[in-house]
Length: 198
Image 1 (cartoon, rainbow, N blue to C red):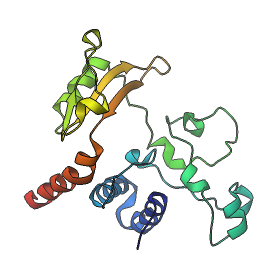
Image 2: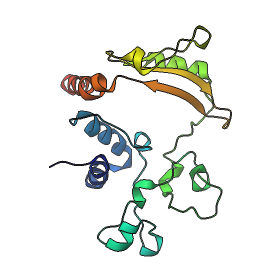
Image 3: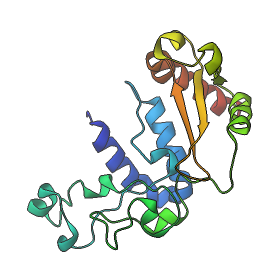
Image 4: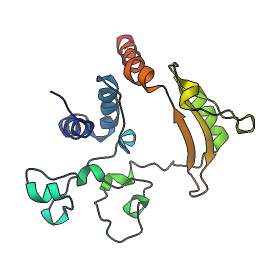
């Protein structure tokens, strides 16, 4: 049976969430995504463990598919949950009293914001120590990662690490990798090696 990316995410999440809880959801989804055939992709927020939040009432449905198919088909609103930027009201997505789409209560725990300020220099150090990542970040020498410079390599490369001026604890950065090599083959081998090592 073939699944589109959205179908895979939606059904796999619903099937595994009760078994592993929210903490394990992101890890298990990443393992599933990175070991299936094809090019893996993470839809925004999956790397954080963001929940799909289906509407509980038909009055909350905005998607025409959900309105037509209610209650069996709740539509795509749950997959379009606003990005959870921080732990504030409405996850920092909007200052509106009621966002167009529901923000889940888990946004207070699972969001992009770091707990404390991290400098760009410290972030580079942490990235450089992580297996499978390399830092190429020398703007003065015009050295930064591009898809052409990482072609044929197993490592993902991070560069242009900057402190985000729009948020006191934010970072901006580029992450580049050869997705045919790393995403389609090497990840599966590396995951298998880790499993075999125990």
